[in-house]
Image 1: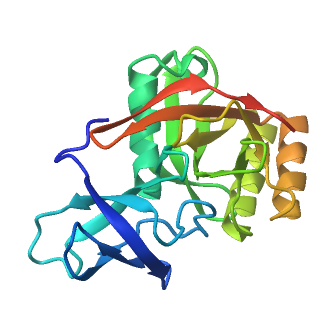
Image 2 (image 1 turned 30 degrees about the vertical axis):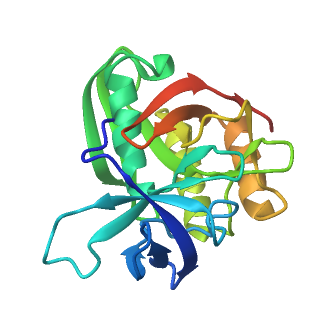
Length: 235
């Protein structure tokens, strides 16, 4: 996915109120920007770190700039915009990168389904196998061994989504939980049991009941983010 215009570097002062952050662009005064990520942003929101902003050039917006990317102390760029992951996965299906999700003629987005009135991120249809329900999660955090981890905070919403996938698998549909890892420095992915043990328990139950779990990492640069490589899942 091309990022146009190219992102602008800044220095993070602080993140607050979930959707806001203060930054400094070059030698300018402190500027408040929008933060398109509702998670804790564990490890990617340290004051003083380099962040990358999108200039919306929209005079009607209260906050002109949007925080799209963070840079770790080791120089690893991490995509933090949760709203991009559906587009990243859709692009990677369309260009054949995600081999496990090929063979469907129709892809629908944000389709209402399930017993708990959810919306599935992608519904793949008209293929040789059963309709495929794909729930996508944005992953930015890593542990001390550099394994990607999810979630980075307790997520009752994420637990609900797993329950919905389990139900659909039980009805004979193909159910897929897809972890979109917006960083390139990981080899493995695991549930963050130390943060949300209930999520880890549900994930293991889902695997035992027919839900597929996939994880891909991305190349992340100020002008492009693209899913590249499958990552081993450690359960």
